[in-house]
Length: 239
Image (spheres, rainbow, N blue to C red):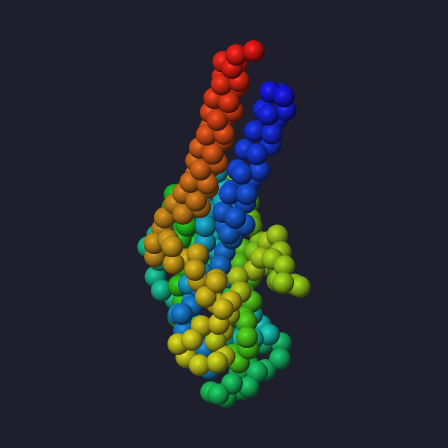
């Protein structure tokens, strides 16, 4: 019976640790949020980039703007330690906007870290830009390429299908098509994780993972202690 009990303890500990750690891992990808994303208006977009590597720093972020739902005007906010460039190009199909017919737009934005800089392991960075007018759609899908100092590239380019998040999800901006100031449930859910961290660089992914691991270990220790006490009590009982 004691052997079975220890097996159950081991399984329970593994399940607890996996359940607590998986949400932190799943959330560690490039995301985009905005409080005022309304079709036809200009919005301030925040792209949050966590570093998933244990040994390398993130040194470049390439943001591919959507050609199907182009945005005419893009202005970047300076990020200390980074330089930013934009590329413009003709659209495959001209798009009619409130400001006229759009034949070209910003197609790509690239942020590059200064030598020796970047997003270190366990940290994240926010990259902001002002963009508009936003197209009259429910969502805008961006694609992001995250380059590390060791040459590895994470390609956040997969679009969600069937309500399931892909392995390498692209940043998706949810627009409020109802009324200014009332964010849709999807946008509120996307913005919630960002609200828990600081507005600048911070060790958010590592803190979440470490906290989850600490809780799992504590639960396992308490379970083991309870099993030991039960075993001692059983041995002390008179025949």
